[in-house]
Amino acid sequence: MNKVKAIVLRAAGINCDQETVEALELAGAQAARLHINSIIKDPSALDDAQILVFPGGFSYGDDVAAGKILANQVMHHLGDAVRGFIDAGKLVIGICNGFQVLVKTGILPGFSESDGSSSVTITYNDSAKFEDRWVYLEPAADNCVFITPGRRLYLPIAHGEGKVVTKTPESLDKLLEEGHAAFRYVDSAGGQGGFPVNPNGSMESIAALTDTTGRVLGLMPHPERFIRRTQHPFWTRMPENMEADGMTIFNNAVEYVSTNF
Image 1 (cartoon, rainbow, N blue to C red):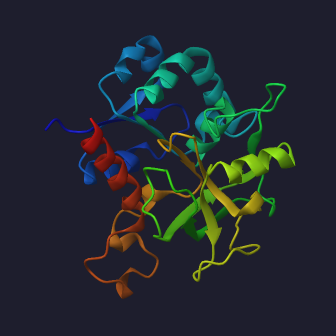
Image 2 (image 1 turned 45 degrees about the vertical axis):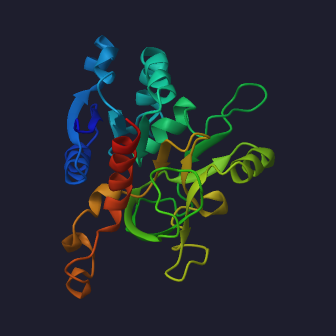
C-alpha cells in the first residue's frame, strides 16, 4: 500500500509546521513542508497528497487580522486548487492560525450570508489577552472524519484571537442545525461554562468547525502539541501506554485516507 502523503503549508510567521509533520509521521503518513509560494508557482504539487494542513503560528505576523493575509493568498492564487483538492475527497485541517485562515477564505464553514459576506469570523478573546492553557473538548459533529465519536480530548490552546462568532443569529442556527460545530469547549465532566472553560468566549462554546463533507476541520486547540504522553501537564500520573489525545486527530485522518484511497 502506498504511504499516505500530507503537505504541511509554510509561510512567514508559521511556527508549528515541524511539530505537525512529526505528528503526521507518528500517525504513519509521509509529510512534507512546502512553502505557499512554491505551491502558488506549481499547484500540481497538491496532486499527490491526500492531506493538506494549515498549521499554527502567526502567518505574516497576523498583520491586518489573524490569518487574513495568508487567507488572501489562498483565495486569489490557490482557491481553485484547494477547492479541487476537497472535491477530490481529500482532507484539509487548519490548526489555530490555520483555522483562522480557513474561516477567512470561506472554506469554513462553507456557506455565506445572502449578500455574499462572511457568515463566521474568529476575533479577539473576551479576556482581551493571549490565552495559553489546556482545555477539554467534546465532540459535537457526527460526520467529521477527524473525530473519534464520544472521546473527550484534553489539548493546549495558545491564541489571542480565538473567539468564533457569527454575523447573524440565523447563521449561528445554521452552524448548529447542519452540524458544523465539530468540538465544543467543556469542563472535565463535559459541561459547558464560562471562562476559563470557554477560554475565548466563542458562541455556543464552539472550538472547531467542519464543512458539510466532514473532511475539512478547523480547530483552535493544538493537537500537534500533545502527541506524546510526556507532553501532558500531569504525565507522571498517566498510564505508560496511553494514547496522547492529539494523536487521535492525526490517526483518524491517516486511517481515513488509507481506507478510501
